[in-house]
Length: 452
Image 1 (cartoon, rainbow, N blue to C red):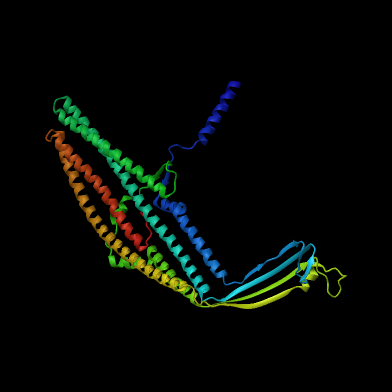
Image 2 (cartoon, helix red, strand yellow):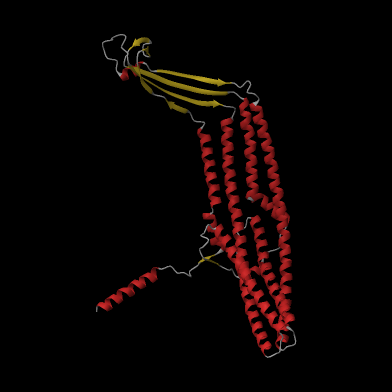
């Protein structure tokens, strides 16, 4: 009974460990949408841009608060020893005294050449600048993720094609070995078959390495652990047959100039630089400040003038010594070593430079879009050509293979035909995904959702 009970405990413990153990072969399935969402959620560059956006918002709020009064209090207390002046009576005394002075001051700027208002406007524009920058970072990241996702799909198909090549080369090598054994083929034929298999294995190694690297980059975009295993979902390849390729470059440019975050970023920076001119010009104007204060004091050496015998208590002194003041302060700039003029000139130069940067952004965007339209058309023609080439090589290989099997074609012609077929298959895979990628680039500039 004891042995049975012990064995039962061991069995239960093993079952618990097996259930708790992670599945070593379980891999997370990553769709394109999941890859994009995870990248947007985790990407550190986006987080940095969002922090800058939050800081700009705080600067904007502070510029609004600067129109409010500034209030401060300045109480102080201390002991005086030896001969000193009693602050409550202005009499010389030769004793230790304890004094307390307290005051409250307030001031508000009534006019400062419009600088406060213009600073508020500029800081609000700067918030828009950082928002535009965040949108730009997100858009660029989405395009990079989609591009890398398509690269992974391409490399996955290349790996599959490479494995198929190995299977074909193994069959060819086996046949060559049998023919060599019975004397129907020479050692050169057998060596060519072995070389063909070695080439196929090398192609698989290269394709697998490219797939691993592309997966690594995709995981980096998603801020994932590089050692974490993932599986990329392959979409229905039949959807790629209806890829839109007919785009008008002028229409794409017109839409992109209205919505592209790069252009919005440049335009908001230009607006901020234009507002900076008004801020600098405010330095030419006088500034008017309204101020007010209240002060009082206490001294333990003070006595009542009308009745010195009665103790002069703390709050009584503060009440009797309380005084107030209110007034205006006007500061008129007369000569400031041309600093105001220099500030205005620099602001105008920065605005003109921002105008140039905006135009450069528009020119670059137009150039990139026209190039993207041309690349898409070329990719379509390339795909058609590669489809024809692949089909021709496939038909040719089938004929050569049949003739090779009956000894009508030598191994050199057979291997040449197989090599041509393999290369055309690789080219077709890459051309198919290149067409999809080129089309998605146009969708990106049009502001369309990028899906597969």
